[in-house]
Amino acid sequence: MRPPNLWGGWIEVITGSMFSGKSEELIRRLRRAIIARQRVQVFKPVVDDRFAVNQVVSHSRWRLDSERVRNAAEILERLDPRTEVVGVDEAQFFDDGLVAVCSRLADLGKRVIVAGLDMDFRGEPFGPMPHLLAIAEEVEKMHAICARCGGPASYTQRLTEATEQVLVGASDIYEARCRRCFEPGGPAQPPVLYPSEEEGG
Image (cartoon, rainbow, N blue to C red; front, side, top):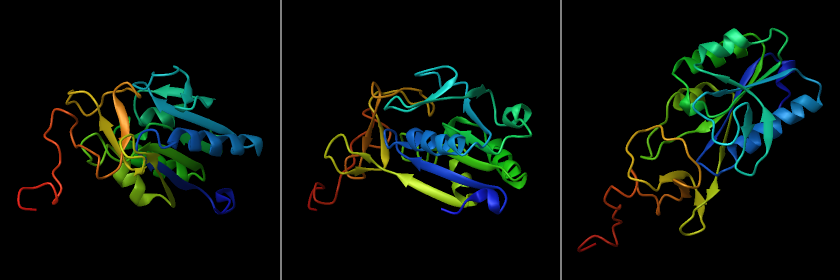
């Protein structure tokens, strides 16, 4: 990875399913920037209060202080002009304005590091993430371990019958699944049938 501060701003996106290590990778990159004596600001949406109110916390309990914001525009309002690196966690929960905000920050010469789910529990693109993936200079897709078969997992399985897209939770209502074990929409939906399982298949 090239040092972005030598060429101006850019956008890095860390994505994947739940339990794939996205927040941990975000924290790792931000900690390295802090060690390098760069000015860092970290933001997360107010809806994410699972582990701590004013910290980004990974499932493995890595922590880094952060600021909670109600929408993407508030990131610009709270930005310190001296900030060199901006971190954004749980990007899928933000409004579509996050795309313009990240582009603006990069245009200002900031290194922008964003972490978020690329797909919801239905296996569909989630919030502003698809657009961010398209405009980012760097994308890293993380993989979890499938809770059913132990293979590489790219999907987030909801374990409840709730149907709303945004339902904040952890291992109590979600687990990682691979493509074969994933049941789009959760247990309330009929299971996916593979060719070998279909009558006459």
